[in-house]
Length: 181
Ligand SMILES: Nc1nc2c(ncn2[C@@H]2O[C@H](COP(=O)(O)OP(=O)(O)OP(=O)(O)O)[C@@H](O)[C@H]2O)c(=O)[nH]1
Ligand SMILES: [Mg+2]
Image (cartoon, rainbow, N blue to C red):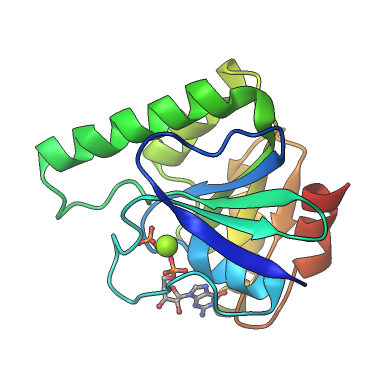
């Protein structure tokens, strides 16, 4: 898949008529890893240390003309209140200005941890904006079937759920079908 890093943005986001597929979730949940797994290249920076992605990173699928958008993670305790507020403002500005370009948001949830309070708030907020959300369970290679069932159950009647492991390539086809179709 031909993919190009377009840039890191805090404002003046590339809203140019191309569709966006957006990856959202708490710090360290595996957003950047999932993007790399989908495109089959290490384009997004992955780190063991949470809070690695510090701006909104755009990657362009060149043949399809679709942006993959990697958001900074939320819920990272070590980030100061001021910084947290700054991220919130950037993310808010992104969704409000680019809303009509967004095709789908993948809200990533760790399979073992399950949905956090912040995940559920993010889901409500995105739904209120009328944005399509696909709940994307991550790191399934670390989870038992019981963990997976429990997490799915705790998501209630949310219908669009995909199960992924960036480490093992699981869920690639499912996620790509939302991105491309
Ligand atoms: N076992 C396993 N580990 C994973 C998987 N996906 C990501 N990780 C690990 O989880 C850590 C965080 O991954 P990232 O992709 O950087 O997470 P992120 O959501 O982009 O984090 P921020 O940029 O800080 O918001 C890294 O150590 C990854 O190697 C997975 O599917 N399985
Ligand atoms: Mg990241």
